[in-house]
Length: 422
Picture 1: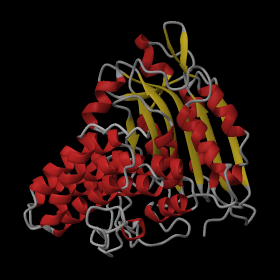
Picture 2: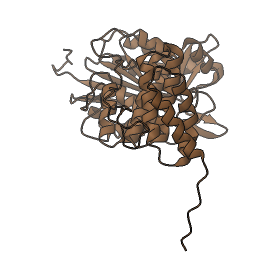
Picture 3: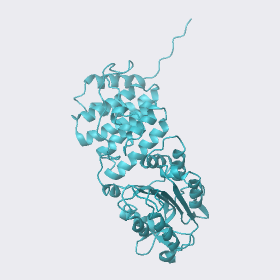
Picture 4: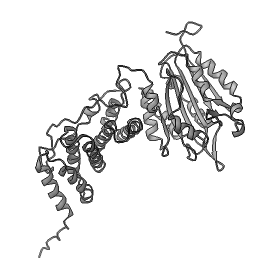
């Protein structure tokens, strides 16, 4: 335990608004609006605990040393600490990153902006697991190439960093509270149980409508620097697959033989709250409680993280595509579910071969969802791809391909005119 001078452990929240992002006289990111919105949330909710908490809002600062003084005071807090930064990220001619402050100019970045390395320097001495840095930033044209080259926004090894950095030229909030910060706040206000920061981040990033290429933190490099823990890595699903339980719909081409996917197995089987850093039980709970859009947004956010970390064609990315496929099934969106399952099957087929059970399971998922399509247009649209996948798997029951082709052919046939009664 770490104790404040009075003998009572305390927390600290430091909210920092840097320079606004303006393009063609339009405010694209308004850090002051973000700070004002966050300041309305009780500090105990922001920090995720009931400890007495000090909150400091630093808006409009022009002197980097003033910000450094606040950072140093916050870092000396013996309890949990949340540092939030919003504004424009810039760089000097040597490629060093800075948070632009009010009045920062390109010619005087080194003297008018806060060096990003100062943040890590002040937080480096804090014990691991008690410090969180939350960022909602836009990189300017000088900072973006630096970020692309280094692949991240480092702070310190013992600090958890969550947030987004939008590329130059894209609006992050159109002068109001930006999407990422707004959705973070909305999730905090939703219910009595506060999600873990990693779930808050995923929900906010998934719903924020980020522009293409936005940097979502943590990055692959930062994940690799984190110490191992007994909790599951949130970016690596456990590898569990759909059980072939034999529950097929009566309308299926091979009734009684098409396995019905069960999202519980792939999501870890738990239907309760957040378990450690693993987002799958939380996703499952959202889906089973009918909050399908939130579950889908969260799964999509994690899929994007995994694609960035391991590659879009990696096994880890395919597993998250399968999670999204079955979430779509649970929501009744069978066209989307069918397409996702077919894509997952193709990816597994390319990397794992025709005999792999996981390839067959993905094909079964695609077939099941395709049999649930009710309108002829959807059947015809995805049917040829499904037929191609089934044809590539000779070890599957040949009835699957035969009956799928028959249904596709029947759907393609023109409707017969109804008989006229006389």
